[in-house]
Image 1 (tube, rainbow, N blue to C red):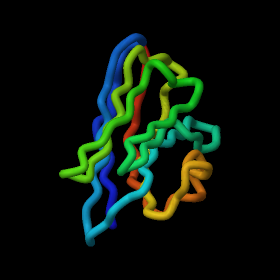
Image 2 (image 1 turned 60 degrees about the horizontal axis):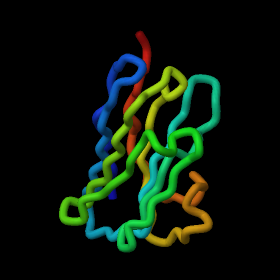
Image 3 (image 1 turned 45 degrees about the vertical axis):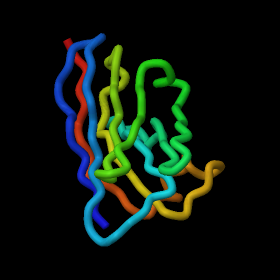
Length: 125
C-alpha cells in the first residue's frame, strides 16, 4: 500500500490550496484516512481525518472552519481544501491511512499504519 500526497506550495496569507492523497497498491479499504502536519522544530500534529464509509470528519480546533476534508471512494483519494491560510499553517503535510482505526483513536498518528511522503505548504507574503 502506497500513499502519494501532492498539492503543496507557496501561498500568501489568506490564500488557498488543495492537497490530494492517492492510495495505490494492493486492494486496500481504509477505515480512516487522516492529515497530519509537522512544522520545523515541532512534533507532528493532527489536522483532520475522515471515516471512509460514514464520511464522518474530524478537525483540529486550529483549522476548523478553514480546512475541509473529503474523499473520492472510486479513486481511493482523500483531499484537504485549505482556505484562509495563515503563516502558522506552514508545515509539511502528511496523509495517513489505516483499515482498523476506530473513531476514538483517529487523531493519534501512532495508530496509522500507512503514510505518504509529505507535501510542503508554505504560507508567506
